[in-house]
Image (cartoon, rainbow, N blue to C red):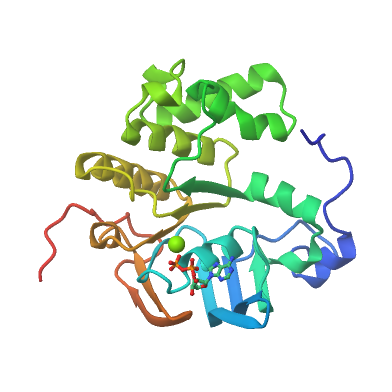
Length: 272
Ligand code: ADP
Ligand code: MG
């Protein structure tokens, strides 16, 4: 486990260069949580090159609810890994909260992931044989928070996610929908700038899917920025903005609701 950091993540000068901090005065919150600029990602396997992202430019504002769709192989997971700082672009820039992720070394990136991004995965990724409460406390333990505070915040997050009555249960004692709610509690417990979900309803039946999508809507209505990657049309109904990916490129980008509007109702009747 990593100890809490004492020194700043990046120097004051590089923060100023990145536009995070003016030379004098308080830090400025950039308008875009995410700014990808002409991002390419090429996987190299021997002498074979797979061009998974082919020049993606995408800016996402604070408070938006963006759904990214695409068929299998279109580059969704590669994009998710890039947005989540699990992978760096081969070419192009990624500014997270106004800072170019290339300014960070791998240890810093691990801290960034823990503090700024809440991840939700298709397979929930909860630690087995560990209670819901301990799973949700984990990111706070990495952040070095004292035990009492960890517990209080984890319980609040589990309550917010609608599983406050399941804190002592193991993942194996929870339904898929409940496990995903625990995963969502874990994603929000650090109060991240961004919630990033890759196929979050891929393993859920339609009733659990509805409940989890309602929860994403609520989190967004509280001002959290949400990016959901999916190939399910029902999830797309939740989008304020829908981005389609094909063959490593953005081929469609449509806005259905303003960033400041309430999250759309995914269960509404959609014509066609
Ligand atoms: P999606 O999530 O939309 O199915 P991916 O991002 O997983 O798409 O994959 C995009 C392309 O990149 C595919 O052609 C895939 O085979 C390739 N790819 C993904 N990950 C790797 C990897 N680690 N090494 C080599 N090729 C990869
Ligand atoms: Mg994928």
